[in-house]
Every structure is written in structure tokens, then in C-alpha cells.
Length: 198
Image: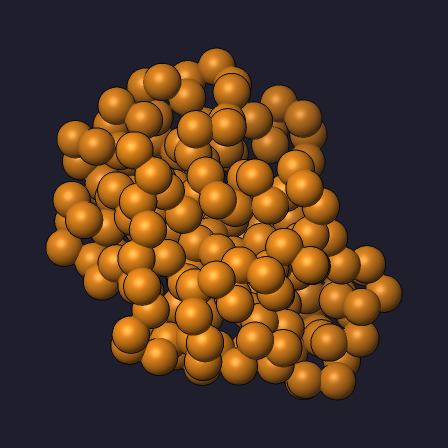
């Protein structure tokens, strides 16, 4: 059943419908379908874990808002906003979260730091994550449109124990990156050490 909530707490200066329209205009249809799936998963996880539903909804709807921006735009934001220059060495997988949060703040007037931090961390996590951050991190991984080996186990864990789901996701994401011989962002290793290796 599709969960819908009305916005009343002003995490976003408008209605959920207005936010949906802004997000839809910024991404492809396929990406927008993923975003809606993440919102549904996030609301279910938020409800189960005592996280503010409106905060979870806003974070989920904006988490990939900047995903389809160009490398040139991300690099310009890093320079113009004085973000960590090391970010220039990375790519969209990192930028759409860490730099995307700045774009969301500027374009959507979302200033709630808990939401922005959840967006920054939704791909690589952090050694210590709030429940909202864990909800978004896991919801992005298990939303209904995802289909990969192990996703059913990930979903099962998500609804049993959020922290165990963070551990499972982190381990399998890093394994995938290593199998692809991809460079691993330092924060992802710190997340692994905190949630998997401890």
C-alpha cells in the first residue's frame, strides 16, 4: 500500500506535491520511479524505527535530486561553495550525495541539517549514523525496484534490524566495488570498519 503524508513541519517550504514536481523536473522517468520507491521504503523503515515520517519523506524524495547533473556542474559547485577540494578527484557516485546536498540546499531551500546530512551519507554511510541516515541509506538499497543478488536478504534484514541491514549493505557494496576493481571512497571504509568489522 502506498504511504502518503502531508507536509506540516516545514522541512521543505511547500507541499509534498510541489516537492515532487521539482524533483520530477530534475531527473529522468526511471530515476523518478526509483526515488518514489525509496520514499516508500523510507516511510516504512521510519515508522518502524521511530523516525519523523516527514523528515524521512523529504530526505528520500531529494536524495537523488542532483544525480543526473554533469561532472562540470558538480565541479563548479565544489569550487564556488568552497567544498573539500579532494572531492574534485571523485565522481558522480560520491558527488550526487556530498555535493548534491549543497545543490538541494540552494535550489530547494531545504536547510534542515539532518536531511542534508542523510543525503550526503546515503551512498557511503559514516562510522556513526543517525536513525534518519540509516533509514535513507538502507531504503535506497532495498526499494522495490532494486533487483540484484542478495536484495531479498537485505529487505528481510531491514525490517528486522536496521543496524544489521546497514552492515549487510556496506559489506556487499564494498565487495561489489572490489570485484569491479573500483576505487573506494575513504568514508565507505570507515563505515565498513564501524558496522561490519567491529
